[in-house]
Structure formats: structure tokens, C-alpha cells
Image 1 (cartoon, helix red, strand yellow):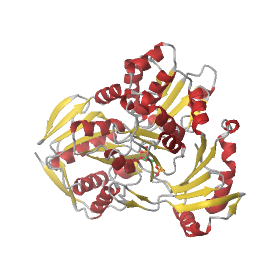
Image 2 (cartoon, rainbow, N blue to C red):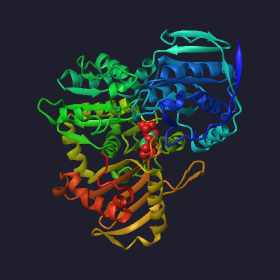
Image 3 (cartoon, rainbow, N blue to C red):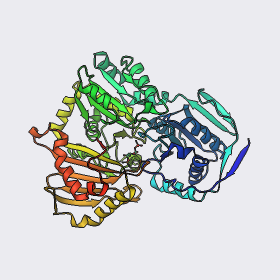
Image 4 (cartoon, rainbow, N blue to C red):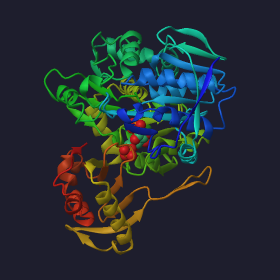
Length: 543
Ligand code: G16
């Protein structure tokens, strides 16, 4: 085996964010860029000698090239075995499952998630650890540190592997096993859910549509929803993964999946619709005439999980990211379950899941999952919903109405100000931080601040502390505004403003969320000076 050791120099900015390293594709394609980052991962985990990894990605532009480079670098560093999805494809939850199933030492997932793909768009690399979950902050920091002292990387000089062929290939001293990306994941879903009940629902005339947004979930959704569960061919739309996702943002929300939303709001709407993102870990849930917010979806899944075989024993606890609405907390309180609020980033759920403190986790950013893997899981959420609907035999709209009647309704929306000047964004947050102690008791646009904090989290399992995780403002009357900067963008800064208002009176449960939340939005704007500091008169994206 011929191994080359390439001299290299540290590259600035290889700092993993909320979820892995995300950069413009052209940045990743620069000479040594990908190689430097991968070698930094190998170094940070103590080398690859004798180790087993899982490798796959969401199929975006450069996925195929990056997979070949990573395999050659794994062989050069002494890995024993790499399990790779056919054509280098694996959804994020499927990769997490394979790591756990095979007891691998970790895995590399090639994805920038919901960010667009293509030579002028975004690419990303995530490292997941042996529990199947995203690398914790201690490891991402170590990877960055390694990237700053790198002087060489090792690569096996060999021709490309035929990743389209399922089976084992010997590659230098390493074995590469190319697997069907769907098969093991389908088997896991069949254990967690009552496929017979869901198939019965569909056979009875229940109509569904799943929009795979030309991203990785297409093959999974076709195989499970159409082939295994009997949804008519064509129920899964945009099912073929494309390197540029057909030119769209593979982000399942009412903005980027507006065609699907229009479909459920129009004549001839199906009973149920859903979409997933680039790498298959996000989900959006819709019913005829209704959009379910991700925060509400988490609460509904928590309240009904016991109706599915995978959670028939009930839940141990629930975790949500801090900006996610407190709808799930209300279910937890009613059922006497522990409830945790973590910083944004699925990596913060890992310890809670591993220690058995929680079973369900969810985020406002369209992520829900359970202890079956250590990532959020889009298709899992869809199957959970279908299983619950198959048992409860009611429409999505009726299920939501019943849920709000029982637990109250946490009206919720998120405003994103994208691509704003990084210094202006940092200044806005810093200024707010400084003013936090003086805010309680002050009125802003007619709302009085009850509490204000800079969210910090102490992991109850390992005691690690994460500070500066978003500013949380509580107002009299149960409203809340949260401000934080996104950690997944690749251009300038994105300011996220999360707005929430609880209503419990029966006559208040079916109002327009935008109207209910308008006073909170005004108060947050005046309080933080969003318009004045960013120069923006309105958010770019409202979900
Ligand atoms: C990632 C993380 C999520 C997070 C989301 C948004 O999701 O895994 O935990 O909620 O980013 O993060 P931010 O608000 O910092 O942009 P994904 O689907 O992009 O991997």
C-alpha cells in the first residue's frame, strides 16, 4: 500500500458550529481543505489504528469526491473497516443507527443539512462518536485545536472505489463494506412502529404525501411508505436525491416547502403530509388545512408515545432545546415526567439519552427524535405521527384541537434575519447581555419584562458547562422572546428571534399565531433594537 504524507499548513476557521463544519462548497474544494479537517479529526480522536467507522452523506455536490478522499485517508491511517452507504449515501439518522448497530468507533456524515447544495452553495462534514451522536463540544474544540497545529496528512494513493456496488472491498489494509443505506434503518422502524396498523390506515383510504425535497430521504420514504406500508406510488414526491436538491433549499418549513403547504390547504388535500431535509433528520408535519409547529409536534408525540410499540412502556423524560416552545413541558408536568431545556444543538441531548434521563427530544428547528438513535430523525417522526393517527383515528386538526384543549396552546413563531453584518449582530447581543440585569420591571411596547437571562447549561451527566447560549426574556402574562445567533450559517450572521405566548382559555385556542405574537415581536424589537441595529425592517424568513 502506497501512503503519501503531504506537508500542509493550518487553515484558519475550521471551527465546527452547531452541527459540524459548514462552509461554501468551493471552500471545501480548495486544495488540502477537506484533507486538513479530516486529519484533524483523526488526530483529535487519538488516531484511527484498528478502528471501525461509518461513512455516508446526503448526496449533495462534492459528496462523492469527499467520500473517496476520506476512505483513502482512513486506509492511510490504519482504520480496520469502514461501512459506507451505497454511492456514499446515508441519512444522518441511518448513519447514527449503523454506528450503534455495528459498535463502530464513530462516523463521518457529509452534509450541510438544510442548506442548499451545489458548487456555489454549501457543504459540511460532521463527526459522530461511538454512541452514534454528534461530537460533543469538548471534541469539536479538540478538532479545531488539531487543525491549528497540523503539519501533514496521510493519504493512500489508490484509484476510486466502486461505491455503487454492495459488498466488501479490500482497500490497502482496510475493508470497505458498501451497504444498502435503507435496509437496516427500515428494520429498526419496523420494530418501533406498528406497520400493520399504519398499512391498515392507508388501505382504508387515508391519503398522505411526503416531500423528500430531492434530498436523501427519497429512497428511505419510498421504501418504507410506499413499498412496506402500501401508500400508492407517487405518494413520495421529489424522491430522487440530486446534487443541488433541484435548486431548492431542502429545508422542511412553510417557506421552503411552500408547495406542500399550499397542497394541504387547497382542495383535494391529503389527510397527512410531511417533508424532510437534506440529510433526513428534520421533519415538517401537516394535516388537511393545518401546519403543526415543530414545538407542538414534540408535545403531541410526547403525549401519545405510549400508543406506539417502541414506547409502550411510557417515557422516561423529555428534553427540548431552550428556544423550543414550552408545549412539551406542559405534557411533562401533566404526566409527572422530568423535562430538560438544553442549548440549541442535538449534541446536547446525547448525555441525557445515554444516561436514560429522557426518551424523547425535540427542537423548534424541525427536529424530533428518541433514544432509538442519537440524532433527530425525520422519517421516524413521520412514522410516529402515522402510528398515533392509526390508533386514535382522528384527523391531524382534531388531534391538535384535542391536545390544546387538554394542555393549552403555546403559540409560537421564529423570525430569522439572515446574512446580517456579523459585527452588528454581535454588538446587538453584547449590548443586550450588558443590559440584562436592568430589564426586569421595564416596559417595552406595552409589555413588561418579568425575567431576563443569558442562558447557560450545566450538563447533569458530565457537569460540562455551556454559556452564552441565547438571551431569554420572559414578559408578564406568559409571553417569551429568545434571541440568539445561528451556528449553522455560512454567510454573515443570522439573528434568530423566537416568540411564544401561552393561551389556555377555550375561546383563545384557535387564533392566528401571527396576531397573537405581534405584541411580543414588537416588544422584542424595541427592547433589542433589531431594526435600528441591523437595518432590516422585517425578518427574511418567518416560520
Ligand atoms: C442543526 C442542529 C440543531 C439546531 C439547528 C439550528 O440542525 O443539529 O440542533 O437546532 O442546526 O441551529 P442554529 O439555530 O444554530 O442554526 P441541522 O438539521 O442543520 O443539522
